[in-house]
Image 1 (cartoon, rainbow, N blue to C red):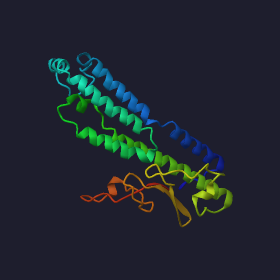
Image 2 (cartoon, rainbow, N blue to C red):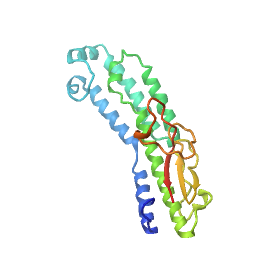
Image 3 (cartoon, rainbow, N blue to C red):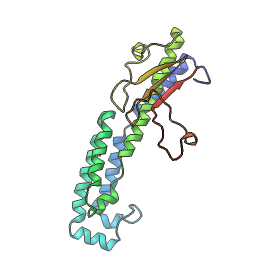
Image 4 (cartoon, helix red, strand yellow):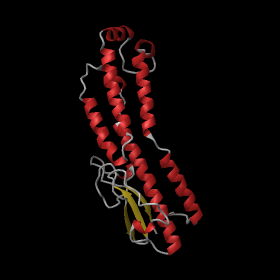
Length: 231
């Protein structure tokens, strides 16, 4: 919209695509798949270790671990961790990261003796962050399209996002990172809609800098997940 003016029908079509993309997102299914993959090892460790799982000991050591009960013990720990990840993935977005971080901390504190737990348990906390950021991007974009539709119809931008309801939005979208409504600011004749992002800090709709413009040797400036239209 910064380069091409779209008609209302086009904005509606784009908005529906974004809505469908969010509805199709269900990371819990991926976590269930990871759990099944791990279970395939614990069910038959000596027959499935080669080529499928990295970082595991050779077959003779696997057989010994199985004989002394370490494989079964690790299976219980693995299932406990993965079940918790699946349940966390079904929480509201703004509660998922805290739950996943707690699970990951518990995993990291597990003794290194449990070699199969450490070899097979994926790092899922970061996956949750990436999915939440994607949802934030979809929601800010949907809201931005609704703002543009409002402007086409009324001739000006609204003062608040609540003015988009119910004609252009069923409700003001929620920021998946903190559970509050998305933020919105007018900028001259344009606007920014934004989510706080993973740092949880309100940076006023600051856009993430491209890598080429980030200061070398310094922390990256704080940024939000944004949808910006400039006029």
